[in-house]
Image 1: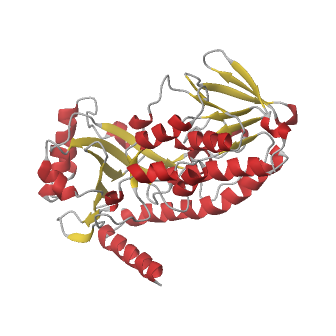
Image 2: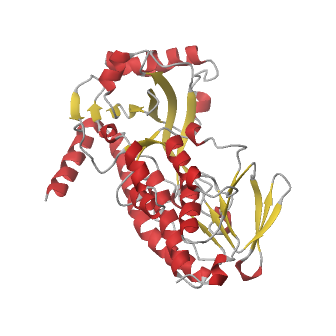
Image 3: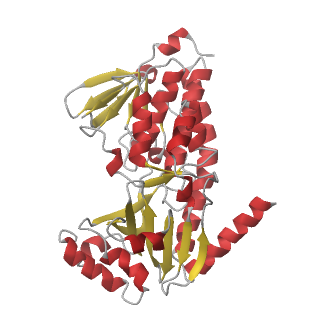
Length: 387
């Protein structure tokens, strides 16, 4: 049971992404106030990612605890579960289509839309924009003094790092650092309204084309844009040394096409028909099964706690599950420190299995005969599900 003293605790959440917002909202549902400190000057969640598939046992569970499952279901795209798998020749290995009106377990929603849903349910003043954490200083009794770049200082009883891959709070708990996964990506955008034939090829969800230790991954978003991720196994400095002029999009796309010179035309068309947005990025991960020695007054959720590659589809789902598990632990325990320990022990268990699956999938998807290997994995999973 929650105590009156608990409701008076000063709780700070660093990071206003889906995890941080979910945490604040579930705490709010239990009468516990928290403040979310977001480094950006305004909500830019729509720019930080594309379409997300929200899983029943994690993301949807958290939305239920936040009182938003029904509003989510009303706007989620169940048809977004379409999935097509190819090799570079255009040979089809999988072509799964969601039936109209059928509700699967992993409906899609755009990141910006999801965050708007959460933001609209939060009490005014919960989130403070333009607060970039510069330093957190551990004090006695588990309190922390937070220093922000804008000159503001705050004293809090609990600080939660929901601040992503390069968390400012993680070094207070562990020496582990985000390491390069071996994959680099180049993100492109294509407007389906301008290219209806490519939209038809893509269907209503995702396309994976895998071969030669690289890939073309495409994902339809709710705004009619397809986000395309050209994926390369490469050294960490490859984006700097490959000679692609990323600041000159038209030329960059010509250069990128050379890397897929003998791939089937419908796959190359994702590059040819994209607009002039070319965004290079590296994929990072934390060691699988990372744990830290518990310290009072501080913990982590989401990528700050268990950064992994996107190839288990678990990133945002785990962040939201973390948020729910931590909020519920705080609400159920008289002692804040006991709540954090209970959350951390549970989080280590479920996140480590997801991190291992993500790492295994990364290796499989960029191996020899990747499309065939991924098809075999899906067949195995379907067989297990059917039992």
